Length: 155
Image 1 (spheres, rainbow, N blue to C red):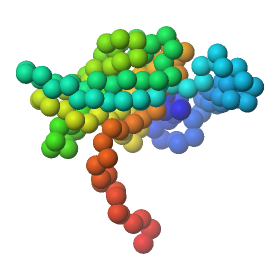
Image 2 (cartoon, helix red, strand yellow; image 1 turned 180 degrees about the vertical axis):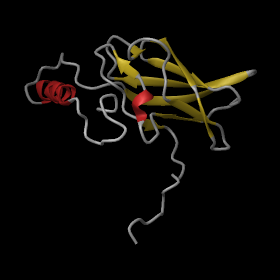
Image 3 (tube, rainbow, N blue to C red; image 1 turned 30 degrees about the vertical axis):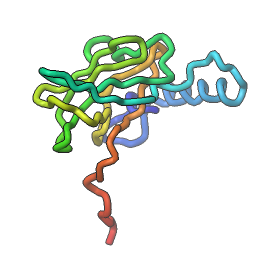
């Protein structure tokens, strides 16, 4: 994942060193068998809506997060959005509640049922990383049709 080293105006990351170091981590783990090498960022394992009187949230659990989840550079986690049954996403807040678990919620979304992370054209603001500083991949928990579904380009 290189969403954190890209350029919004160029699909090819200029920071080749970071890309090379991440590829080297994968080679060390997968080719050379160095299982202790952290080679990937956090990966979503499960998402569960939690609905309570007064408001709800989504509970997310991640793999590939040795040392826990955190925001790159400190500060608040960014890049999350939640939706209720209306399927309208609202920018959301997120917090680490326990090592590899996050709580995600948004004002005005009382009963969230879906989360998206880094699900924008340029996800550079998405800052969820593991303790090794490797970024999480953009993801979505819904299977709702995307705006481009069924659209044919170049015709």
